[in-house]
Length: 405
Image 1 (cartoon, rainbow, N blue to C red):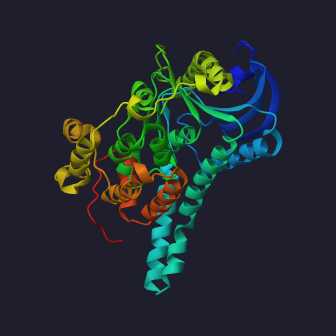
Image 2: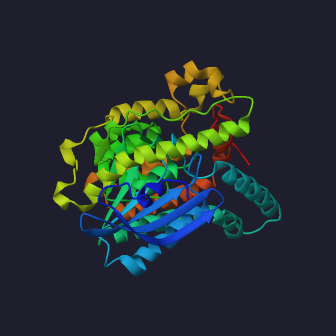
Image 3: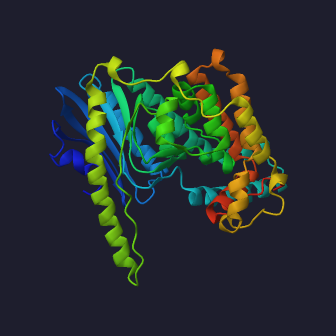
């Protein structure tokens, strides 16, 4: 089976013995495998989610994650010392499927209009958004299971490849220890769409990196690269990778180009995995006090409160982009480089409310995550969310002025 699990089944990782599969799920090109391994005299698990080319985490993938973690909790909790989350070392790791969300939202808005015209009760109309609520609840349910497992074994995530967006970043943040590829990064892009990270992403960033860094990441939607993620406390270790990402050829035979690119990505996965996995295995089995951790004043501050406020105030005002609305991003590249992409006012409102409710002295991760989930759920119901999805999919400048459905 192709994918990142290969290196843990190849016998080429020094000191690793693969004891076999505990759980397996496959659907099309997507897969999730949970294998039992030993390293350094300790037994643990390697959980590989793979969904090329951009590793979106759809509902079936979420269900597979839950099933695999239930296996760990029910059968392996007393045997394993660690659980490592791993995926492809590809250039992009996306969150949810925006096309699927757009289709569901368009259908929901159409039904809502019919029900409002018919005078249906608000609770019945609100129930139309249950599909969004269920997805958010599944993500937070995953967080709860990983944090529960973390009380009995060490959870780690290998962040190989390029940038992680949305859910792909949030799932890794749910673990205790993160090992980063030096080419990698994280981007909470939700505020440019009309949501906030609803699967505990902001809460976990708060725990690992502190108030200001979490606020910067969530409110500005800026990508933070590996070395800064390590310096601010999100990553525990970074592995220097100089290998370039494979590039897709563009010839007169697209099918052949696609096949060659898939082969190149698999070779790349194998090569990079053999550099990242040994570091993860060492951190999975070493004494806990030997795991690098940055806390308090040891963390780099990515931006001051004033810098965050000034940037967000500019980008959250739709009128900053007057004359640019709806234009392709590539046509207004210089303007967007200067201004930054528009931020959804409703997203910033919810984020500000969260950070005001939970200053550092009152921060409680579990409560924060519960409120984070509820805030994200409210944003699904804002009509500007659909506009944000369309602008993102079409790569155009979003118009977040107030609208009526």
